Length: 70
Image 1 (cartoon, rainbow, N blue to C red):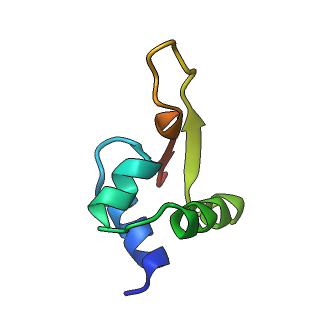
Image 2 (cartoon, helix red, strand yellow):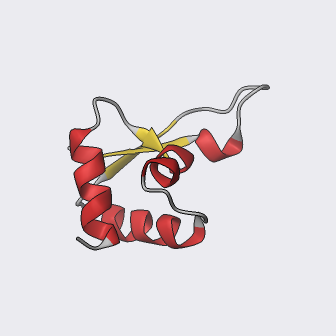
Image 3 (cartoon, helix red, strand yellow):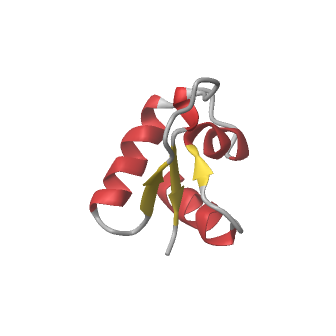
Protein backbone atom coordinates (compact mmCIF):
# COMPACT_ATOMS: atom_id res chain seq x y z
CA UNK A 1 0.00 0.00 0.00
CA UNK A 2 1.51 3.35 -1.01
CA UNK A 3 1.27 6.54 1.02
CA UNK A 4 -1.69 7.88 -0.98
CA UNK A 5 -3.67 4.70 -0.30
CA UNK A 6 -2.72 4.83 3.40
CA UNK A 7 -4.01 8.42 3.64
CA UNK A 8 -7.30 7.52 1.95
CA UNK A 9 -7.69 4.45 4.18
CA UNK A 10 -6.97 6.44 7.35
CA UNK A 11 -9.41 9.22 6.45
CA UNK A 12 -12.16 6.80 5.42
CA UNK A 13 -11.89 4.98 8.78
CA UNK A 14 -11.72 8.14 10.88
CA UNK A 15 -14.89 9.23 12.68
CA UNK A 16 -13.86 12.90 12.35
CA UNK A 17 -11.71 15.08 10.09
CA UNK A 18 -7.97 14.99 10.89
CA UNK A 19 -5.41 17.79 10.77
CA UNK A 20 -2.01 17.47 9.10
CA UNK A 21 -0.19 16.68 12.36
CA UNK A 22 -2.70 13.97 13.31
CA UNK A 23 -2.34 12.31 9.91
CA UNK A 24 1.47 12.46 10.12
CA UNK A 25 1.40 10.95 13.62
CA UNK A 26 -1.01 8.16 12.67
CA UNK A 27 1.13 7.24 9.65
CA UNK A 28 4.41 7.63 11.59
CA UNK A 29 5.80 10.19 9.15
CA UNK A 30 8.74 12.33 10.29
CA UNK A 31 7.97 15.35 8.09
CA UNK A 32 4.93 17.17 6.79
CA UNK A 33 6.19 18.39 3.41
CA UNK A 34 5.55 15.19 1.44
CA UNK A 35 2.28 14.62 3.27
CA UNK A 36 1.01 18.14 2.62
CA UNK A 37 1.74 17.89 -1.11
CA UNK A 38 -0.13 14.56 -1.26
CA UNK A 39 -3.10 15.99 0.66
CA UNK A 40 -3.26 18.95 -1.73
CA UNK A 41 -3.08 16.58 -4.72
CA UNK A 42 -5.86 14.35 -3.33
CA UNK A 43 -7.99 17.42 -2.56
CA UNK A 44 -7.48 18.77 -6.08
CA UNK A 45 -8.51 15.38 -7.51
CA UNK A 46 -11.63 15.45 -5.25
CA UNK A 47 -10.63 12.19 -3.53
CA UNK A 48 -10.70 13.99 -0.17
CA UNK A 49 -12.11 17.28 1.06
CA UNK A 50 -10.99 19.83 3.60
CA UNK A 51 -12.48 22.29 6.05
CA UNK A 52 -10.75 25.30 7.54
CA UNK A 53 -11.19 26.11 11.20
CA UNK A 54 -10.80 29.79 12.15
CA UNK A 55 -7.71 30.51 14.22
CA UNK A 56 -8.24 31.86 17.71
CA UNK A 57 -5.68 33.48 19.95
CA UNK A 58 -4.53 30.12 21.35
CA UNK A 59 -4.81 28.07 18.15
CA UNK A 60 -2.00 26.14 16.56
CA UNK A 61 -1.64 27.20 12.89
CA UNK A 62 -0.75 23.61 11.95
CA UNK A 63 -4.20 22.52 13.11
CA UNK A 64 -6.35 24.99 11.18
CA UNK A 65 -7.12 22.78 8.16
CA UNK A 66 -8.77 19.40 8.59
CA UNK A 67 -9.04 16.71 5.92
CA UNK A 68 -11.67 14.00 5.47
CA UNK A 69 -12.92 11.48 2.94
CA UNK A 70 -16.56 12.11 1.99
